[in-house]
Length: 441
Picture 1: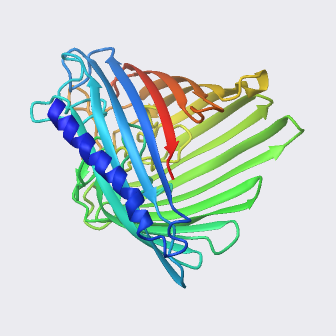
Picture 2: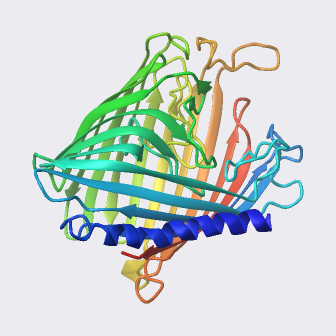
Picture 3: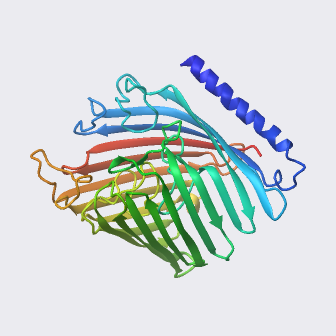
């Protein structure tokens, strides 16, 4: 482990050291350097999962644990002068195992924090390298290479040690005030615990799917400070078409009191060769809440009106539903769920940067009677699961340093408990995350 880690650190340091030289070589092209930035994010991540009934298929004792450190360097250039400006983006990332303990990580790595070797043990370290070329024409930016799309139908995931990425082309346009149009096509994806790219796509609820590409198009429009809309469409070729519509609103009642809320709606239909079977799902969520001083209280409701799970790309954040939370998505066939969430901002009480959050969600009526063969779940007798229930509770405390040499350093602790009937695991989970961003350029 020591030699491999030293080698990776040396490669990482060489890339970091070369970046200023690359920038200096372009100084004569005004705009390329002036618009450049180089940032490093250190992320220290501890996570454990306790499968209360020993239900994890990855570890015999029903318990998984890992502690790791990630270093993420990201360079973004400005654009060269001219009608069409050109630039580059590049990143170098390194993940280092700190501890997994004997028998605590589990064969296969059930928490997806680190890659595993052929023996099912956590690797000592892994890395990600990539970049993209980009061009700017008026208010349109095109990127080709390693990209990080952020839309309700295709959104890179960043809930583990290192972020997920895709390979392809993205386009963003901001010509109209308040309107952002986005489109893209990707043909490969990299999981958070994966060094290289995979041309096979993977989804959360169906596993791998031999789709050649995924594409999306849509936009976000902010009408004013209190009302915004989103509309998107996407395709995972030969698997699905997904369409999304959403809106968010707020309404101030007084200086310290305001109402807020929103709606999210997805339509998912099988497409092409129907690699994930036949399905036609509608799922939506709605939220209404009140913010009063340091306090915020919200109630949300969510329903899947389809006979199959509402699926999305694995480890991505491509699910803008209110009741999709730390572990559960509450997106099973015919599932109905409610959630109550409370937030507290301690700045009002003289501790800026400190916040608390807790939420409780429960779902009922999950029914796999009419699910297709890909998404079907059965009991021990081979019968489709019906009348399934579950609940989840999350508690989080977070502190962000407000000033000094450690400004923007954050400390976060999350605790999660979920219980279900037959189709989901009963588990407790703890995550401790420390992040320290550095602005180098």
